Image (spheres, rainbow, N blue to C red):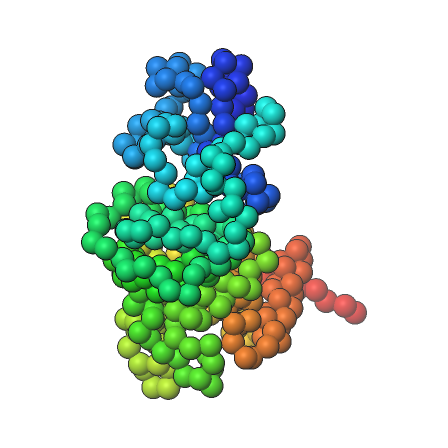
Length: 360
C-alpha cells in the first residue's frame, strides 16, 4: 500500500480526505520526493479508520487520532479541531479537486518572505518553525523570541520533526533557529555540544564543528534522510575525542558511531537506520585514505552497498572545507579500481589471485 492508496480508500468510503499541515504545505510549495511523514484529515471516525486499515496504531500524540506505517512513510490521521502550533499548518489540500483551503487571513502569511514566529515561544513552536524554515522559502526574523519553559514534545514528534527538517531543501536554516533560540541543548544535547568544539582554521575555516556540520549539509545533491542524518552526526564524536600526538580528535569516528546510534535509538528511529548511520559515521574518514590502503584489507567495507553513500558523505564533508574536491576524485578512482578488480573471475572476494597464469 502506498500513500495514494490510503487517500483513495478514504475517498471511496466517502470520508473526503485532505492533506493537512506540512503535507498540504509540501503540495503548495511543490516539495519533491517521497515524504517520510504524511498528515491526512478526513471525516472518518476512529472506528471507520480501523475498519479500512489493518495495522492501525494509536500513538497518543496531540491532534492525532491514529497512525499507519507504510514501507517508507508514516501516516497520521489528524482531527480538524485541534489548533495547529503555527497558523500556516491550517492549510489543507483536497487531492480529488486539487484545491487548497485555508482561512482568508492565512494567504498573506503564505506569501510573505519572512516567517512569523508565534508568541509565547515553546519547544513545540521552535520545532515547528524549524521545519517551516527547512522545507519552505521563508527567512527568519532578525530577532527571535525568548524560549519559555515548556514540556518536551513526545519522542515520536521529535523524530518526525528531525526527519522533516533534514529532508527539507534548507535544513541549515531550521537547525540554526534551534541553536539560536537555545532549543537545541534542551532537545538534543549531543548536537548542542558541537557548538563548543572549535576547529583549527588551517583545516576548517568555517568555524566550530556545528558550523562545519551545517555547511556540509549545504553540499548535498538531494535531501535523502539517511545521508542527511549521517552528515548531521558524522563529527558527533569530536567533543569526546582525546588528542593523540598531532591528531586532536583521535578515534572520533568510532566514538561518533556509538553516540550516533544512541542518539537515534533514543528517538526511536528504526534499528536498520541506526545501523546504516553508524556505519557511515564510523567510516566517514576512510575515503580520504582509500588511495593508500590495500583494497583487499578493507574489501568487506568496500563491498558494502552503502559505500557509494559513504563517498557522497565524504564529498559533502570535504566540500565544506577549503581543500577542494581532488581527494574525493582520488577516492572515487580507487573505488572504481576495486570494483573492476572484484569482477575479475581469477580473484576471490578479497581480491586474492585464485589461479597463477603462465605464458610461454
